[in-house]
Image 1 (cartoon, rainbow, N blue to C red):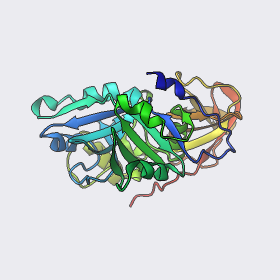
Image 2: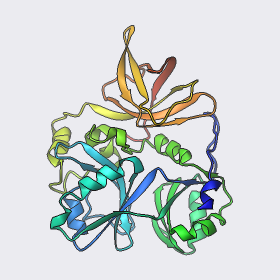
Image 3: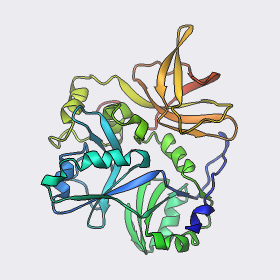
Length: 324
């Protein structure tokens, strides 16, 4: 796969505009496909979103919990070929798929990790680019030649590509070919609730704002962990939320190790939590997502535990956390 060598990290400063169009290799994400006669009913009893009401041209967030309501994964769900597809963090997918299959022996359903190549088309010209590839086809899900296009946000399209067609498809783009780091930056700016391996089994759906992005149905009926999720809404037991945080970062961060932030408490510092995702700019600035107490004052100072001279702050979310 020589084409993989075409992708390189796009270096950006914190004051620099994002490229109008870019193509990213999304090897940090996985696509789980679900097929079989019982696919709809099986998924409906496992995940937080309403699978039954999912329209053919619709993409929704959802979550898969354990019996205690803690998340194995979050995902974007959509119709794909003759079943469904769940786009989620690659690091968490092995455990997630094992848990998702746990009761499948009693149903006619098949779940697999897709071997297709995932590309991300991002930028203000992303939709124009997809339009040029899809001819007269319109909508959030489009069938292309040897690929499927899925709109995730107004500036992010997912391309699901047959491996043998990747090289010829890449030749059609007049845009930088980047690693997944640029896509991660978009997800951070969108406060997308993507659960990595390090956060599996740690949070209930509301603690990563899944309700705020339409990823929880409170009317669909029973699913694994539903009692805890409902109690968090109707009894107000959830005390945490996911926030965008930003600050200075003079030393390179090791993405393979936990990145811990501390918060100021008077004249002292106390552990606040770990970043779920992080993007480091070229000018010693960084941006990340982390779960914090939802009553924390917005002006609370944070710092990297390994770089105590740094100072970080909490940024506004692009959506509201207020209950309907």
